[in-house]
Length: 315
Length: 189
Image (cartoon, rainbow over all chains, first blue to last red; front, side, top):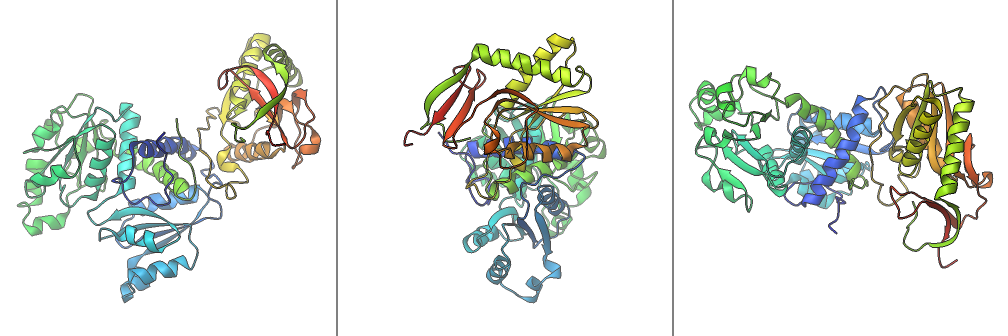
């Protein structure tokens, strides 16, 4: 029988088996009711220390991890690079060793360079959770997206998912592509041709298609996932201007009508209203953006529990 | 929760009929002590307390023509041995959909042994609110000498004196091939 998730670190979706992924999702489901209680706390990680080590600014993901840790009764500490010795020229290795000397049980790390969590995992005794490394992966985002899809559609296998936007630079896209294809979905990506290279379809072995335009990708989709377009990209000549991006690639009601009638809309946030997603689409009942945030805490609780020794649910 | 594969059954102390009679009596005692099914809230402790609680609930409904409130507790996250076991156990769902504030809770479990499971259940219940009263119903009480905490059962199906080397297993059709209660031991002893 294939083993459920029993690794110490969560570095990426790429190395996980489907059993491990569904184990994490099932565990997250069992944790989700805790956030609905009066007393939003269980003693599971009491006395454990979780360090959020964020080299890139992030309020949303960091808050989500912090709440997840605190709801499990762990002691959560936030380190952001601007206010620490990292900006004084300390190497990553020294940072890791210094933190290890304070005996954390788990380090959640976000960094602008791919591979940083993997490096930390080699050096640190703590469990390492990747909260985003460069353009490589953002595993907990893909897990919470999958949980949102599964809760609304009842399954992931057999669905058609469109991922639209700046695929080239997106760790969210990469983690989602790995996860969705591993669980049997068909993924279509589209966006400006400068940001969606053709040979991207070799990222995974099957079920990934690069579409020539967003309409082709959206057609008949069960799930439409919109990626955030970063304002800096317009200065690098990937596309003319943000408003042109909105006109040609943005998810408007007209474009969304090409998807299935009951298609859902996801966005990892924060969104640029009127650019990659129209305001009325973002606020419609088909948009599950706020559900994603809700499931994000449950998924991160499950990941922290599993990384510090928990066993994943098997039903 | 022991490794189930090496156990040898030494004796069978209850069969399906005697289990059913005991549960009927427990249902009867519970409504007698609580003056009916009003305000009564049965909570089954995973795993084996759950089908037992369901059966008691149904028997109470037959007696009183009204179903008590019903919920499920998974006490995994409140165990006091989480940091000592190698890999933490699987977490399953807790379902307490109705508010427990001011209710008469009757916790239901299969076997009362050291009392630590019930301690965890009490701590978990308190995180959900303030019940008026919490009572405990168990099918088997292994005897006060095994208790590691000051915990007692209010409603007992059968008291069975046992050795620490023995394990009492309540087998239920929801999980096992038979309906019975047996005393098991590891073969080496």
